[in-house]
Image (cartoon, rainbow, N blue to C red; front, side, top):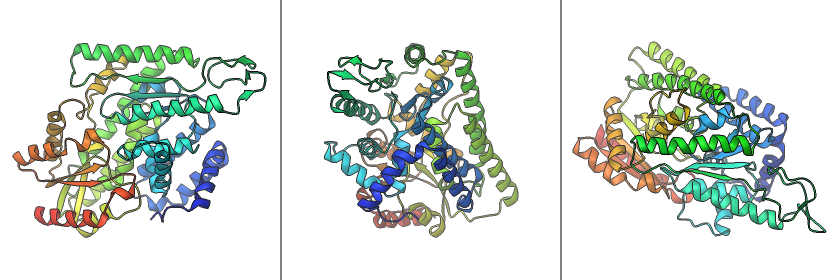
Length: 459
């Protein structure tokens, strides 16, 4: 279990290590050694593979051997991976900060720079980490407009911070000359008014509530423009065949993920949401990679082996739970208390839902446009409510729990309507208010008391 937040010395030491040491292969090797020594801490080999994948991706982002793209949740990872970019998810990195007790300090840094406590803590912690120089420098920023407006606002703020640093930074030399600007191809000795070196921001506009042909063409045209602009700006190989191969890999990962999800319908459930909570990292930036294929194939094999061994006998399921949204990432006992004390098994979570159909590699831009438009949380609340009811029925759950993360308008804003909709269909739902990143917005004792009452009602 992670200890209390670090003191100032520990914080400064951690910042120094993250800033400098991650650029070396030694840290990558050390991280792998630690993960190997902690192999017994992972109940699934596939979960350990997720941790190793995240470590290697982070090291690549710090190494800077390829342009690093900061991406929002649901950005087109297949397209970006197919172009050879390194992907970094600031939202996932904020979860890691929270797990290591650093989020509170980073939130404080962002708040001291004028970022309101009313905003999502995933993005506010990321802003603080960027200001402190903990995260790798982005070469470009890519966000999609649907589901979350916090990431586009974060990326705009990131560019503002980097622009101010460029204006006041140490790269300026006496005599009005500039050092070689990073990322814009400017020569040494360029004039002060050379093109800015802070990263370009690409925002994909996803039409709200529209899934028709016009919407698909509109999004597909943006993706095609993104492909050509990135190839030209960053001198990347504009090879569409590499994007098609990334889409084939995405389809392969999807196949294994769907197969693993099918096994979660069994009773007892061979793999619970508590064990696969961190797979949201793969959902955000992993599809289109060979690693995602290996992770989900291993998950299916492990779940299948467990189901075969149990033969319907195993951990008692006092009740089966469907979990909506994410969980607290800092140290706590919420899910452990649910499963080990109350006997409530979280058999499925909303972020494990593979909501899109198989993609067509021969129509890469159109396929990725359809995927973006297919998300059940995009559009009228009825889309998400119907999806939640379908998942509740398919996974034979006794109740649904919605974790209402502070500042997440798109998810928490519709919780009461989803609860009313499920009630009409005989499915009870509990809304837990809390925060995935900031422990200051979460009362675990109160949450556990409400959980206990809910499980008693279901059982």
